[in-house]
Image 1 (cartoon, rainbow, N blue to C red):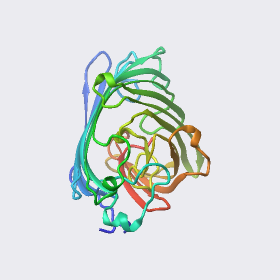
Image 2 (image 1 turned 120 degrees about the vertical axis):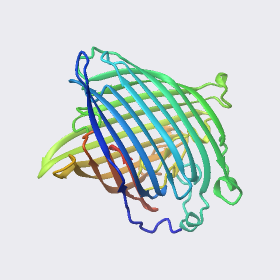
Image 3 (image 1 turned 90 degrees about the vertical axis):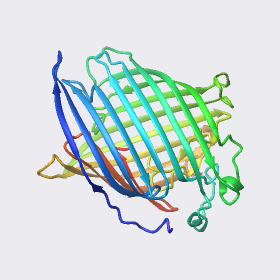
Image 4 (image 1 turned 135 degrees about the horizontal axis):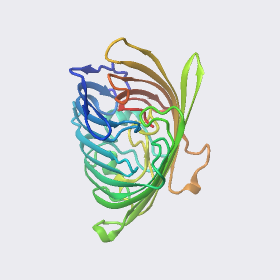
Length: 378
């Protein structure tokens, strides 16, 4: 299969029903449900089918929601399949609970090597030299404690802590890159870790922000005393900033800067990476890996038009992504090892302004990728 050949993008919505119900309480709650089966294509997963269910309970004058439950699953013709479930509870005090469970089988995961100078050969890429298969499981639960009076959801300061479990089992042979050039890090196994962090959220809206900022920082510790084969830790910081201006129509400028640093004997699946739909779009998923990664994203977003039925709104975005991977922060040089991509995309909502489906097309110096996601990237 020619992975660099353009493919038509088709999304078929077999059924889309989004319902609202009102529940009597001390204050009125409104619950909206979304059920969305469909079929589509993206560059890393290929043709596939998916099913999504979402339930959001809103409360008067509470932004963005009181409860959220989302479950999604899918399978592709490449042999990939997986399921993900998310639950979030926002109490009136400002405290919160977030739970996520994810399990997937990826028949065509990629390993290109470590560091920013890992090579990419288009012929080997076509022949599947960088491919391997894996099972991956992720579970985490986080408890958030509000550190300031909860007078407004638009100004939240949260201390969070919790537990995370990761597991990976990879299948590979001497005919592919992972087998011929194995990393010096643990490939298979699990990681039990404790996490703690801070979040400062001053966005005007969590789902479609147009002003404000969002800052979060987190540390993850995986000590050997809780059944980890190797002790390790990760430090994560992210800052998002939003503003808007008018040029023929309202345009939102969104930006994100984040950095991740691993220390200790970190397993391969827990190492930071760049490439794919979550950071530098236009590169294959997990194209660059090392103990540290810093990335940035710049986007111009706007809503283009609405349709006179089902509350459908159609928008678009232009973006520029970039970043570096390295062993430690002292190795970063502005022009050395810098990876970047440019692209465009579209976004739409149906019935509910908080139910957003996004498609991005990213172009790098090696290839191009098309990805589908729920909501804005950040």
